Image 1 (cartoon, rainbow, N blue to C red):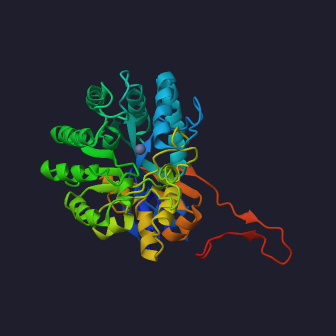
Image 2: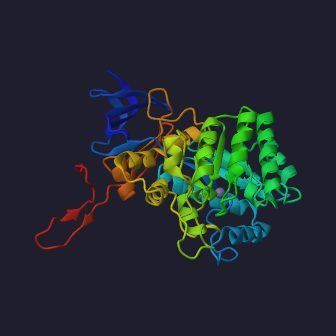
Image 3: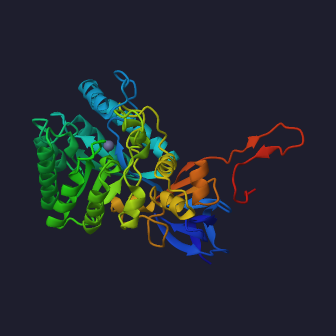
Length: 429
Ligand SMILES: [Zn+2]
């Protein structure tokens, strides 16, 4: 008789199939009908969604949970956020940054968010943020994948020591090459920074993820240079463009050439709908732009897309919960992805598609993959998007790392049921 360390019984996977999952050590050992198997720990997931972990491909862990220090962002714009972050990073210490980041990682684990790509600001001669997040990466590595991007927040060329410090950060072990071409002084400098950063990545064998065209200016076209450099240097499948908000305002004819170019370069896109629906369009009267890139149109061209959270309680965004379903929910609305297939895709963009962007080889619900999964109080992926429900159980690499009791509201209404659950799928007992 088969025997496992952990057996997750009868869960519904995101594609709708019902399966048991047998875990031995850190690995998924068996799936399918495992009735009769023994296990050290059995988790009954009957009627509940069992998903691979949530993945956030765009975050800023050096700034997270700093909201209000030293003040709040009064205009709500990207540019005031950058100015405010510059005030904060003068006074913050490595220990404070580590403590805030570890607090955030606890939030993430409780929400089944087990892989995060975080940018880390390299525009600081002391590289405090890099030191802090390298320590955090080490401290969470047994239960969480934390991938770091060297991010010259003040511009690779605009800040006099940014290029040197970005290279130093990569030497110290930061994983991915980042940049911010739309914040350089001129379009030409922006394009040159894209070329330079792609060459650095090609030389070092690293992935690339640039903050790219996070502006309402339709003439901000650094994504075109990024795609072209990706092809020239043979970096296909290794490059992501984050935000890409200017695409919402670009000329349609121009975009009809750009999208196939992005597909040819196998560039992934990382829209950040929570933050960009609030940051963008601040100079507009009405009509007011939505601040989201062309998600559905990218899908039609076969481009990989992952929802990013970007910010939680920091100089740019005052809210945030570490729940990638909040992010997908906002993205679904703003991109108008309302068909069943599109809603399903929104869920995948918070899980498997983002895992592909991060090149997480050991990820997914399949035999031989890492035993990491989430049990949600929802019957299927679309219900999970609608409810953004409790995570009943989170398993990371074969260990239960978070549990939460199912918690229904108790009603006191004459002639009505004594409790209510807002699920549309049959409720488990
Ligand atoms: Zn960002």
